[in-house]
Length: 495
Ligand SMILES: FC(F)c1nnc(N2CCN(c3ncnc4sc(CC(F)(F)F)cc34)CC2)s1
Image (cartoon, rainbow, N blue to C red; front, top):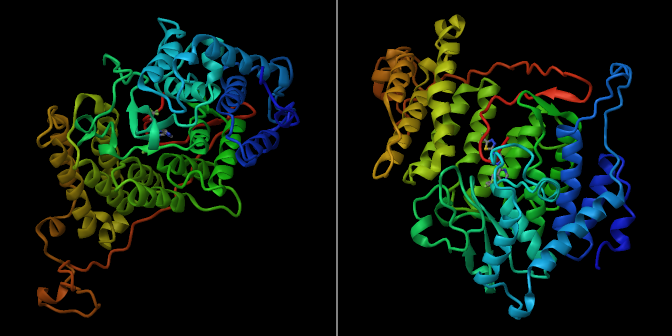
């Protein structure tokens, strides 16, 4: 049995974060493919101990031992799980019927059936911590992403190099065959949708569909498949508490992958790293805002700017930083992406994202600035800012265009009520386009409003972005736990 080569064995036992980083670095630089099954099992063992099976020593006085709890991961634990996966896959797939170097659709469907067939019938598929092979091997449970990843890891165990993970913002499938020209569903999506496992993903399916990113999904290399399991580490101990150690491990591994260029074409992983940096800034590393902007640039450069999450990552961050003008611009940009799609019943996740922005975040932002008397008096508030108003309108315009020609309606009475509430907070001067201050762009007074127009025909506005540093109240719970300070609703992976 192939099992482990001495090269992996030398890194065990894993006693701390640096040991795990060294194992990953070796796997990513050793010249051969990184071993997806090994790395998924290692992350699953650590995640399980730090979140699910948190053995907090009750009798020990926790306030005394400030040492964070990092589990010691023994070689025999990993070896046992790895060989269980390897033998399960090799025993279930008779390759004599599949001679060629490339996978076939029949074989992809069969491997998907092997993974699928091992899952316990009744488990709550939305639960957290079901994404790794550890969950598959110890609990026979996998979430939607986990099944797709499991198929790809199984093909690596079988010696195939052409089966790779394809990722959208809320679904996963595989590409395979010569030049990765073939696609196949291998997992389910959402609730109450019949799975289409084995079927190709055709142009008809992907066109104007957010779930398939209009044909611009992330096509993973082996190294990007490693990025996907690192990005998929779930820090949640409870809905309000995250593991500090697990977050630190995820952050270190994402920087390792970033430095090696394996996040370059993976906008969501860049956004994930930006979130981690907001919570626990690393010295001498890029700032969150830079990472969110790199995620946007990645989508623009590699995915025809068809991804929405890069803009909502940025919008959420700016909102938390109370840079409300910036947040409105990012959300208007997000709406300018979604307007190119038609909304259908399998797109609920992105619907929830825009619903929260329109009916929760923007209204509470308007309430917040309406109370800022100083900004009101000096007209520096966004309520007097024509650019903010323009972004606000562009946001709603994008959502209306998204709804046009869609088989499923988007807007309903709550959207309309919240629109009326928010729009009424803008000052009459920006809504009717009169510049009450009478100042034009170059600062001198002039009655004639024509002069206020600059070359691009926009009314220049002296308003600066209204920014106040928000003091992020991070309160640590028990030793090694941290209240999640993320203001956004969870999307995509199951929390
Ligand atoms: F837009 C912001 F508010 C977001 N905050 N978290 C967001 N997530 C975080 C995690 N996430 C992801 N992060 C990395 N890779 C992937 S691949 C994928 C689709 C599926 F799960 F494979 F089906 C989801 C996803 C989904 C998007 S968007």
